[in-house]
Length: 115
Ligand SMILES: [Zn+2]
Image 1: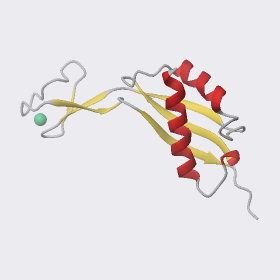
Image 2 (image 1 turned 135 degrees about the vertical axis):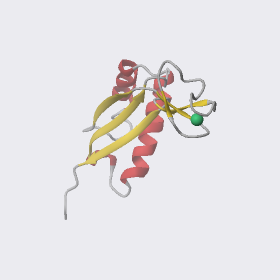
Image 3 (image 1 turned 90 degrees about the vertical axis):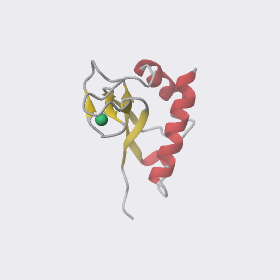
């Protein structure tokens, strides 16, 4: 399942983000799911449940936030309307996906006990 490797990569990113805290302190993993990322939220949740304990994220909750696709002109940076994403109406430059094309670890919330 494609989603398992995605979720493992998210755990890797979270591990790095929370260092030196242990993964057991994580309460929330917030992930932006791009409209064009080719990821199904339900499969991602299933993969999360499969790997959560093994990765030490026993108390973590996965929060998914949908992110719509956005396109910009790669020459002048103008945001392009959804019905004309290939070419910029201002300068003729090519359109480039600027958001919504990937899975992004947005935020990690920890419950840290002060000692
Ligand atoms: Zn342009």
